[in-house]
Image (cartoon, rainbow, N blue to C red; front, side, top):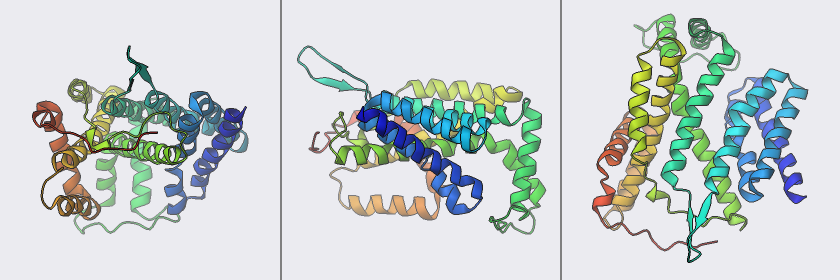
Amino acid sequence: MNYAVAGIGAGLASALLFAVVITGSPLALLLSYAAPLPVFIAALGWRHLSGLIAAIAGALAIALLMRLPAGLAFAVGIALPAWGIAYLALLGRADEEGHVEWYPLGRLMLWIVGTSALVTLVGAMAIAGDHETYRLAMERSIGAVLSGQVPGFPPPRLPASFRPEDVASTLAIWAPFLAGASFVPMLTANLWGAAKAVHLSRRLPRPWPYLPALNLPREALGVATAGIALSFLPGFFGFFGMAILGALSSAFMLNGLAGIHQLSVGRPARGLMLGGVYAGLFIGATIIAPLLAIFGFIDCLLRLRARRSLTPPNLPTT
């Protein structure tokens, strides 16, 4: 029954992290980003049944303490995605010699992309039944933040030539792209943090993977084509296409970052180069992140890393 106790505890911890967002402070918003972490830990450390118990316990706690819609939002947007991705991460199959082939990181990332886009779509449809109503609601909400009408969130400094209402209208159009793009690193960071914690506790069944070997499969290019085609359609079809493209942009960025890590193995001044990339991401993410995404797309298309003999360093196994 240890898995049940771990699942209930993880679900309550996840619910607490999710619920603090109602305080409206920036710190609470930051803490809410870690809400999937306990569910990931339960599912990776005590297997998927414990993760499912965590998802149910957390959703029930939110529904009882807040409202039923909030519980459903927690289940659909936080708990169930974390449980499903953790389940895939531990999938493996053994060959005739007993060697286990674990679920590839690239395909796992593609599932994270699909999950992020789908959660973005479901969240928008929960706000409004039609796309135009949703867009107007988002425009009003963003305009309130830009105008300083939301307590705890000081208005950003805009150039004198930018009117808050015009910026709000533009951001409302790009909202699905930005939401999809932000959800992928959130899920990925929580998955990495949970897996690292479980690995250090020696409860992770899967050996720690060589993360620079992350390589998106060619199917990602087909998903990108579908996202572009959907983005030209009206209503929530176009919304979903934009969410897919946003999620894929983050996935390609991570793919590009992994490619730089792997291609730079053995190169002189590798540490200086990687330090410059991460410093650029921290200081000028709006410039470096798109460049990494372009490189990640090219790497996925042309398989640049497959052209070199890339052997990962020796890694400890569980």
